[in-house]
Length: 354
Image 1 (cartoon, rainbow, N blue to C red):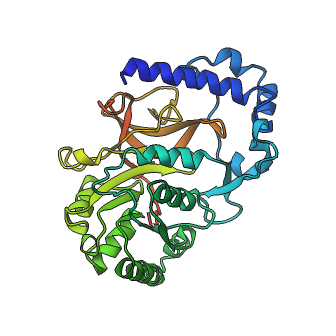
Image 2: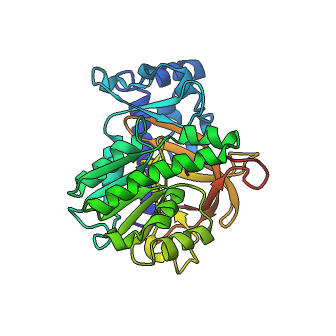
Image 3: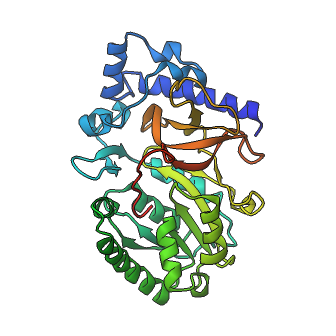
């Protein structure tokens, strides 16, 4: 796909989603009410991705303060929905409703995996947050889609963040050891070829056992804050340069932005992620003037627009910043590189198990 073809595909997707989400027959109460209050019709005024800037930034508080039913498209009325939570340490969490998006996202991701390292029919283990997280169903669906089964070891990142915030580091270490004991036992005694976990949990498992030595060939990893030095450490030392390390950047609101693991070493372990266009788009913006896109090679705040039939979310400002990277031969749209928490160089960030 050329850059022009990718642009045309994205613009067509935008028009399709405007027609869907702002039609009385298919749209959800939230966006239909928003249209009335805004006094303009996106179906008439939003014809390309560039026109998305006409929307205000989506506020994630809406996902907490609004009833979930207000985000159910009329086209899905009567279908029970999944409830997926995102973020939150205290109070009512932010929630997103969904049906099949996670399946589409992870089936698309499956086609990017190398069968040599993620063998078809191989079993998986997921070590990370399950419960109300979309990730739990998504990783299991990925394993099933590829012909394998999935084992799970749960952890609670909200609890970890609370413990770290009150500087109870011994307690945090005991909790991590509790999670690790479970993961190591399953890896030792079950036939597992693939793992999903977070960077820090992967390193912790690697302190206890040889991961490739126990038959794991591929590691799909989620987590935003990985310096090139830490990526190199995970690939060369934790995975012993034997299992493939596949970093991703994703969340409940976006789906999954993928990297190109075969090029990690050549790029000195600096990771660039490419959004699952046209289902979601990432843009690197000036934090002070968010209508401005940063130049290639510059850091800016990550802005996400999600464009699926289940969920429309324009111009959401992630709590991350990244470098705007040029399109790749494999992905004909901008990438985001060296992702880190927004304000990482100036503020205090608690990431816990991530």
